Image (cartoon, rainbow, N blue to C red; front, side):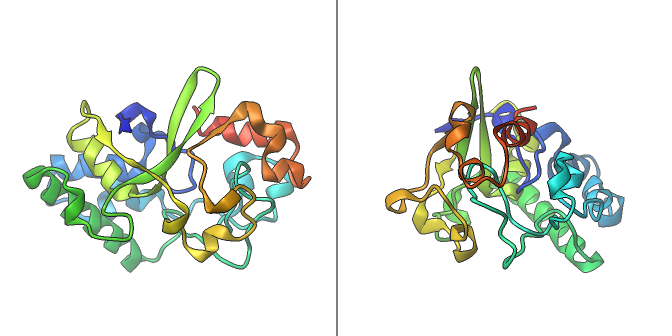
Length: 222
């Protein structure tokens, strides 16, 4: 399917649209000043601000849930605590520098050659992958893989649309399957609709109420 800039609703598990995405903003800064230092970027300033899921969603029961845990209400029965996901949340100085260098290299490469998925060989064929979140008249694309490429593409060529792929069961890591309540017949859903909130794993398990799950979902639609 073809995805445009305003369709993007996240940076990893963070509910950021593209205009507030620190990777996107950092690419714009690199384009403006190719000699910018990593510790002068929006990406650098973004790190190490979040400690718990409460900091993201202000739901009381999430005060004790580390931001490094894994949880999405339309996918998980309950939070995954035996694995961690620290992407774009916390990092040391060298780790932030590595993220910055990756963005810079991608910016230079895509600006010169355009976006060619075959240049990024992986188990997903170099494609950016994800799924749709649907809220009545709104439809957003949740990026599962390819956050760096997405930021670079829309920073360099904001008016273009790009062909992204759907997430598949065969692409998933083991941590993605833990407490996952939607993998029927080893198929990953192509979309999640807020009208089905009463069927979401986090609600049927009793971990969240329907209103709590809806509240989190709507943060990605803002």
